[in-house]
Image (cartoon, rainbow, N blue to C red; front, side, top):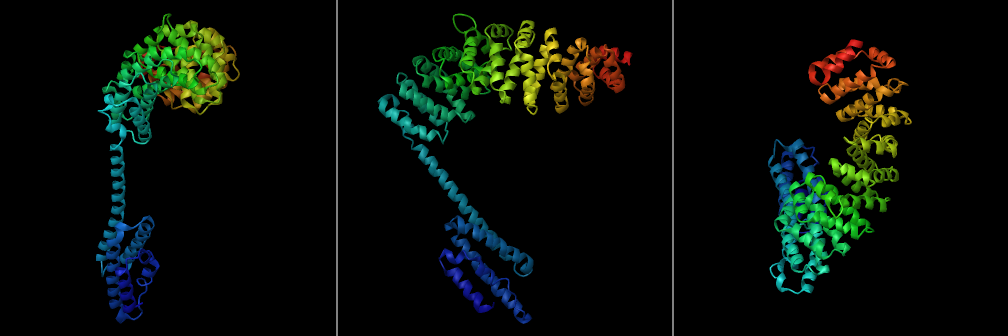
Amino acid sequence: NGKETAAKMTYQCSSSSSMNDLSKPTSIYANIGKRNNDNNKNKRCWSIRTDYLKNVFCSLSATSKTFDAKYKYRCAFTIITLCVAVVFKMMNIHCSLLVYGSTLVFEIFNARRSQQHSREKKNAAREEDSPAEKCDGMIPKLDSDAVQKALEELVQVTHKHRRSSYISVVLNAAQHYIESEQIVELAFSNLYNILGSNKQNCIRTFVQKDGINIISTAMKHHANNIIIQEKACSVYWSVIGGNSTNKSLVAQAGGIHLIIDAMKRHPDSLFFLEEACGVLSNLAVDSNNRLIIAQVGIAPGEGIVSIISAMENHSRSVVLQKRACGALSNLALNSDNRVTIAASGGVNAILTAMEEHTESSRAQEIACNALANLALDNMTNKRTIGQQGGIDAILKAMKHHPDAALLQKHACAALADLATNAGNSVRILRATNGIQVIIATMQRYLDSSVVQEKACIIFGNLAAIDVDSTICESGGIRSIISAMKYHTNSVGVQSKGCWALQELSQLLCSLVVIRRENPKDILCDASDRFPDECRGAAKSVLVKL
C-alpha cells in the first residue's frame, strides 16, 4: 500500500523467472486497487503503481511464449481486469497501460497460433515421409511384399489425412499387381479412405489417373472375391456422387455389368448388396444408365430382377430396402422399365418393404415415391398396386409419420396417380379415415404447393363417386379453397383447385358448402391470372354460385 511495497512487488515480478510468481494475480490486485486516503500522496502512489504495472506487463510479454495453457488463461484474465481498472480509474493519467496490455494479449494468443502452425508442419512432414509415397516411382521394381507393407502403413495415414497425392500411389500399385488379391484389397481400402470425404480435388485426380477403369479391371480379375467387390462398389459410390460425367464413365467402363454380375454371384452377402443397390440407385439417375441396367444380361431385365431378388432375400435389412426402392424408383422413370418392374414382382417387393419397416420414415418415403413413379401413365400398374394393398400401405405411412414432409409429398403424389383408376378411388374413399388423413396433410403442409395440388387432384377424381359426401363432410372443400387462397401464384394449385371444385359442385351437398364458403373472388382471380388453365372450370362453378 505504498512506495516500498509496490517497488518490492515490481522487482519480484520483473526479475523472477518462476511461472508461479506470475500466476498469482491476487498479489497484483492487492497493490493496484487500494488508494491512499492522504490526498497529498495520491498522485505519487498512482504513479508508482503505474510503473509497477508497466513492468508487470513487460515481464509477462517477455515470457508469454513459454506459457502453457493454464498460465495463458490466468494471465489473459489478469490483463482484462487490469485494463478495466485503468479505463475506469486511471485513463486520464496513464493511457499507455492499454498499449502494454494489448501487447501482452497479442503475444499470448500469437504464441498459441505459432504452436498450432508448428504442429501442422510436423503433420505435413510426417505425411511426406509416407513409405508408400516414397516408393511411388519404384513400385514396378519392388516385390509384392514391399508394396503390400507400404499400403498397409498407408491405410493408417489415409484414414486421417485424405490427400490427392496418395491416389497415384495406390492406383499404380493396384494396376501393377492386379493379380494380387491382398494388394488390390489394400489399394481399394486406401481409395475408400481418401475418396470417402467427397473432396472434389481427390475425385478429380482419381478420374484423371484412369481410376474408374482400374477398378473395373480389378472387379473382373477378382469376381469371386467378395471383399474386393464390396470395396469397389464403395469407391464407385464415392466417385459418382452427383457427377453426371462420372456416372457415364462408370457405365462406359462396364461398371454396371460388373456390379449386376457380382449381385448374381454373391446373393447372400448383405453388405455388398447394400452397396451395390446404392450405386445402382445413384447411376439410375442418368437416363442412359436406366436403359443399360434394364438390358444387362442374356434375358432383358436381369438387372431389375437382381435388385428385386436382393429385396426378397433380405427383407429385414432396412438399409438394403431403402437403397433398392430408390433404385426401382429411379428406374421407373423409364416407361418400359415400369412394365418390367411390375412383371418381375417389384410392386410386391416394395409393399413388403413398407410392411416390414413401418417405423422408418425414410423407407416409407422412398417406397411411396417408387409407387408414384410406377403408377405414372400406366393403368395396369395402377390397378396392380391397388389390388395388392398399395392404397392402405400409403395411407398407413401418412398416419404413422405426419411430420415427414417428403413422405407426405410423395404419398399424395402416389395417391393422385392411383386415384385416376376407378377401383382405386373407391379404395381411397372406403379406407378408414383415408380422406381425413389427406385433409390433415393439407392443413399441416399448407405452404407446400405440391401437397396442395396433388390433394386437389385426389378430390377431383373422387368427387364423381363420393355419393356419401365424405369429402364435403370432412372439410375437403374448405381445404381446397384455403390452398387456392395461399398459393395464388401457383398455376398447378389454381387449375387443379378450380377443377376439383367443378367436379364437387355436381353434388348437391357439396354445392351447398361451396356456396357457403363463397369462393367467388378466388375463382375470378384464378381465371384472370391463368385464363388458359382455369377459366373454363372457374366459369362453370361461378355459374352455379
